[in-house]
Length: 248
Ligand SMILES: Nc1ncnc2c1ncn2[C@@H]1O[C@H](COP(=O)(O)OP(=O)(O)OP(=O)(O)O)[C@@H](O)[C@H]1O
Ligand SMILES: [Mg+2]
Image (cartoon, rainbow, N blue to C red; front, side, top):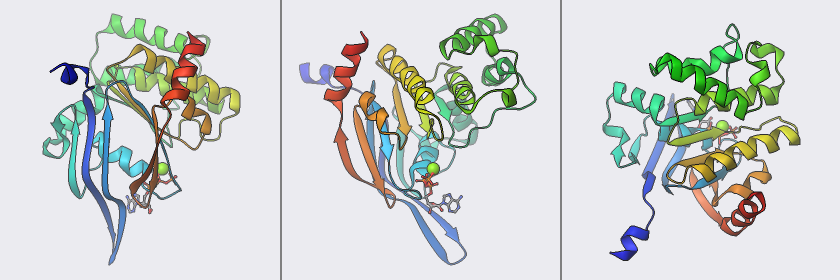
């Protein structure tokens, strides 16, 4: 009994997952018998060579794509049994996704971009305004609220993408190469944002796909993906604990 209450809850559970793309007669096994469990409060880093299935894994976890076989449970809900509108609801309310090739809407201001996910989720107007201000302040871009995306640097745009992902207070953050092509100072700022989210949200989870080794400092585990399967798991708990203590 005591042990049960001590045990952390599963937030993501992938069981024997396959994703096979067909191109003519060719079958591409993007995910191959993949198993992964993520617990509440965990920050997971995923690394692996190009084409190893990292983005595909993020897509099947969020429901953007359906696996060819296997089961994926999000907080106990079996994703493969959900209807399209239920998946859409999960995407809008449960997940905050930062895409590998993120796209801000060029005709909207930074404010308008961050507002967008909240409009779609039909959040109350006053709440929206306050939250956009809070988020832009958090990512250090409050003074750029009424600029358009093309006037921002790559790092600044990526921080807008993070503000957008956090807009609806998601339970799971999925970030696919959030610091690709960014300088080390911008990458450090993004790392700090994820660390803060992780420290303040012990019941939520973060998965970051990244080649940037600095992220291992804030990860509980680093998983290595190869040919569509997890081939190695590195525990980073001690490193994370030390960094958290340094920050406090
Ligand atoms: N829609 C698709 N149709 C056909 N094949 C696909 C599709 N999406 C991905 N693949 C293939 O699945 C494999 C895994 O791709 P994925 O994008 O998941 O790799 P990745 O690990 O994210 O790579 P990168 O580091 O380059 O982003 C690759 O061989 C890719 O070509
Ligand atoms: Mg990818």
